[in-house]
Image (cartoon, rainbow, N blue to C red; front, side, top):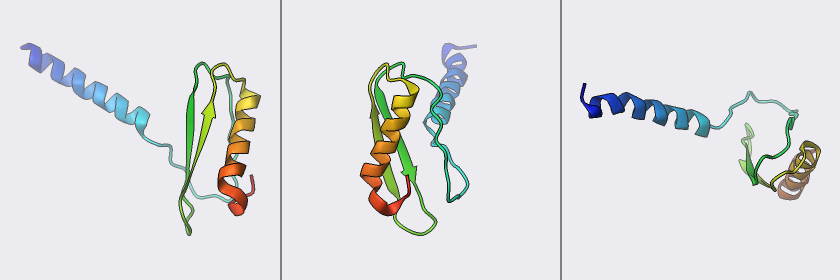
Length: 92
């Protein structure tokens, strides 16, 4: 087996793994959602929420999370960012 034939399945597998990680979570429509944070932040980063109402304009909420933030503070950051970025459009 040549090297290129050996690496091709590995490259495809790596590409699929990256695609699965990068795919956004989809959920059924609902008028109520609960976001659960179950761990502290191991590194700094950004959480992105895309809200796609059945009727209306899509909204994107971004939440910056510093390294080593505990889960309750992350939940507070999410709540505060949603309230600030969505205004009165949603009951947060």
